[in-house]
Length: 273
Image (cartoon, rainbow, N blue to C red; front, top):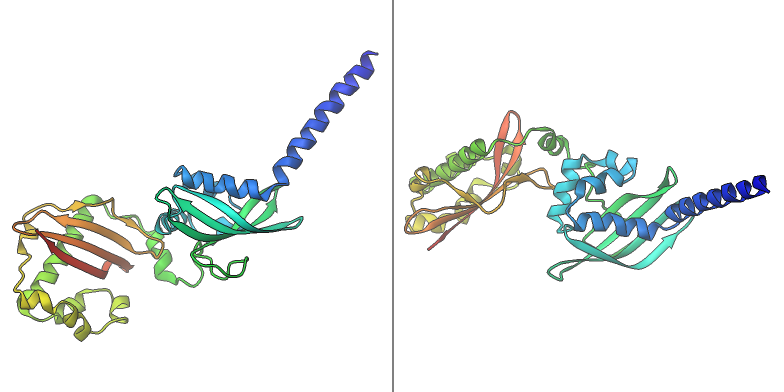
């Protein structure tokens, strides 16, 4: 009698174990929802750690975190409108909605790994094949300079302030000289390949015509709208303003890492009263 009761208890415990394991491995939708729930809570680190080995091998955590923020995937929930599931793979397609109500098309692929469903690929931004044709969470095709940015330590706050100030003063020199020749030589080579000196001159000719002078940025400290960080394109982005008078100098500056330092890759400057 005792032996039979013991066997039943063990058998019941074994069934519970099988049931819990089967339930955990049998629902890729639940796994995908858990992944997006972590993003919704801002816990990108756990989301990354819980993804498949192949997903992690495609990019560093820094790239993943930057891409999530860049695409607006933080603070979202996902609704799946299409599901294709077999024993080893699952593909889901639907929409992610952030707190402001903006919808973003997303598709994910999951695979079985160590008995669990885990994210294998994630695509956001466009409808199409349920299997993503372009995975933004990947270093493939980005080039060496892109990976260098994530392998390079982020400059200190003081270094970023100095870099921003230097760029705006170089920009101001171009305005005062009425020539962007020297400023063109100052920017990143990779940016030079995308625009000409004449195009740069034409873009900022209104500053020359209005006789704008930004020299006062050397006298005050900048106020950043958010902490400068490397985005999913591998660019260091700094945006904010200098509280100068009578106009604030509002800026968005982008830098790419070209050995041995960060070089200007984009500039947007406005004067706001």
